[in-house]
Amino acid sequence: MNIKVQETKPVYPFSAIIGQEEMKLTLCLNVIDPKIGGVMIMGDRGTGKSTTIRALTDILPKLQIIKNDPYNTDPDETNTTSEEIDHIPTPMVDLPLGATEDRVCGTIDLEQAIKEGVKAFEPGLLAKANRGILYVDEINLLDDHLVDILLDSAASGWNIVEREGISIRHPAKFILIGSGNPEEGELRPQLLDRFGMHAEIRTVKDPILRVKIVNERIAFDRSPKEWLDKHSKEQEKIREKLVNAKTNLGKITISEELRIKISTICSLLNVDGLRGDLVCNRAAIAYAAFEGDTEVTTHHIKKIIKLCLRHRLKKDPMETIQSGQKN
Picture 1 (spheres, rainbow, N blue to C red):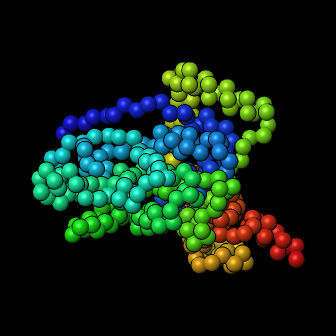
Picture 2 (picture 1 turned 180 degrees about the vertical axis):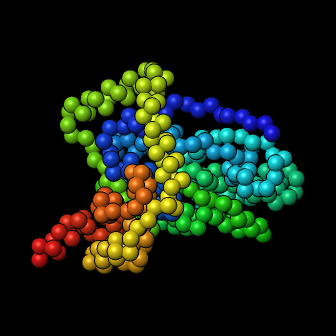
Picture 3 (picture 1 turned 30 degrees about the horizontal axis):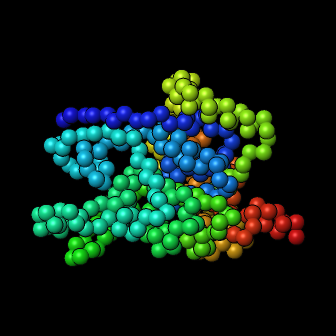
């Protein structure tokens, strides 16, 4: 069994990113528990959204796959030892705004059909993103039908394609991350509600901090290896923290009393359905695991509840609760 490790280009270190704590936390929690349901990031242009997502992907453990497999299949799930094994970075797929349904889901391989007279499936971006991250910048400008497809696949973990007499079903387990500028329009509430968490990011206003961010980026571009070496220990700490949290996720407990408190808050805020309750529970457990705790406390819930409910309301959830308490 031959093993080959692919080389990768230098990526700005996650541990060196200044600010944007909401975005970083929501991304980490979704890595720990992808069932949270992805992240919607809304904010100004040029605030490091794609840089942060690529930086996170870079500190994730490499995936073991069957070499040249279009679906990044884990060889441990195939019950065979005959395939050649490869190790790749966790996939991060950028979905362009102009992408068609065929490009996203896959389609008939016309070249093979013409040359060999057989109908073959050409996998799309969902196949490439399997076991990784699918990132859609300006998702609020993407066709609603495509957003529906992405959300359905992310929730079910499967992509089903039926074209020209061919029916294909392949795994599509990925973390869906969407970003956009609110000035260019919002997603429909029905689609926005299906994202697990919502992060808001703003341009840094402090001139001193802005200069620091610019200087550090220039230093990285001039000497990426030096910069990566400088942050290697911090990077490894975050990597270990994520791996340990993912491993211990099933051991974290949450009391019935706290579950009732979460549902009470969702009820007081008139959150439609039970998705908000479920996401809050999962995010609180993931955050407890991330912090190295064994039990969810009110501290964990306070930290994540706004990120889980903000996009399901017309106003800040904590503001609504405080207003209700005053009345």
